[in-house]
Image (cartoon, rainbow, N blue to C red; front, top):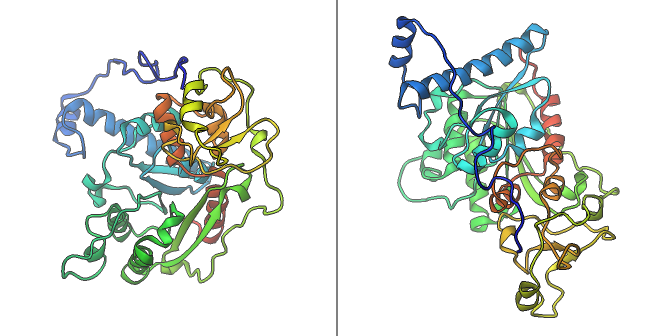
Length: 376
């Protein structure tokens, strides 16, 4: 890939720089703050920042309550760059907690949502997470351990990140949850992983659970991207049937509708094209142009590696072939054009490749919101 100015390279932008501000506290306030035990806060300054974050969340809740709106409180786990949040959030919701361990994804999350997600969820006590109505999580799929003699979900999911979803659900008991994962979860470990997940949610925690595989190309995106969506409801919600949205199967969008003409800095060198991408005459990789009306291959997190078997590239630019631009990645995943990307090119591709199809999540979220009992 040839060079070009990269957003996020060089000096930090203003939004990333910390600024000093004078604040005056009484000795009693200082003593109170110093005595607090806040997860991940090792000094007085960190505690103050954390308290300000919590105060902003509380203020958002109060503002919505002033307008006679009882907002739906949700938490955003394994948040990435906030794709699930982007699909779920509206004027009647408020995010009361978010968690993401990757520092680069957290940087993008902060730039767009104005808050820094908490770090490693495995180190956060579930009792310290705010009460919420809905839990959102795009949890990673890991091999589930079957070692040990303990019963219940602590036996088969201990040591996996899904265990952290379960312990939070068990402690906070939200009305509903929305989980997202790759389609391969269905066949992972010959179906045993999904069996353990559903058993844990239904039998151990008592939720009524539904799941389906949805495809982004049916929700207005020019990309084939199948994902399993798991939705669950607390028993008191009395929801015995849940119909997943299917999107519009007859009105698909072509990749040409999101392409921009000759963006700078995304060209693939002639040498790489000749020595690798087109070394075989086997129809690989997938090439599109301004006339292509197809739905392209799934955008993967390793797209920056320019892989000939999984990649889709655009016939355009200085060398005749280029990668997707930043704007095209946003559109391919259903993010707004003004979504901020304050990281390197490599991290950008990783983040969008790991994210979700926003319109698809939004459609599911609307169904969940319509199904649950309003808060009082």
